[in-house]
Length: 332
Image (cartoon, rainbow, N blue to C red; front, side, top):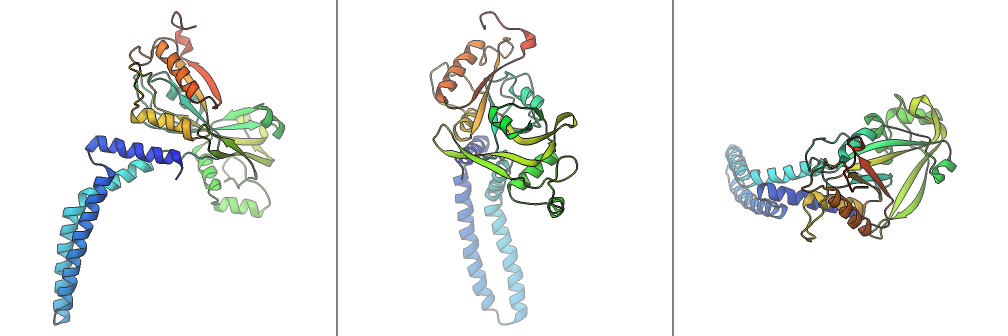
């Protein structure tokens, strides 16, 4: 399991434990004890059924055994098994981050406008409200970037961007897993590469290279390149395109008391910066509207210095949000 997935699983389990006081280990222990009771009861009933003199007696004994075993199962295992299933559902709602797809994580103090930016530039739809800690988990959006040629990719000369449809994102995920739809197979049989619009995309050839994260682990970065032109913004076609991930993260606090302890939401943000091959977009609200309690301009600048020094190898972009509201005195 990838380190980021381990952290997400651990934080989800801890959040569940805070909610109802039940940990995964407690639930599994209850399931194990209930399983032992059901097995012992089953053995007793099997012996009784074998000792019956006639087939009719065996049938009646079997029906009685099924009823009693079902009652014991519901009494001992229904609640802990339901807790395990709830935990499983919580884990399934976490976003599936692709390690071979470029990603940008938006980081900053609470209520500085990260979610609004994600909504504006990607397919992500995080909740947006005017109070701190609106974002309580990792929200993932996508944006497609286009280049005129392979040379423009290496030089960073972007020709255009667009927000892909959910259909396009689903097709990319299928292609990544090696799953081909009927339309993909039909297109390949005709010797072409499906592009955009209503067609399903075939898996394009790819170039890979290794990149290193701050924890020293090497990941694979994939640049999708096709020989056929691909449709982009305003109907133009481009030689090269890449689907990129935009991650909205919970706000991080400047701990004025000097403590290093972080809550689960903050640890999720730091885990994305630590374990995923992401660039960082640090969002600041210098208008004074984010709230002085946890997101004052001073707190945001201190937090920026702390995170920048902690992750010095991350590609880093500073973004100032809410510029239409002005800048407080001394923020410049």
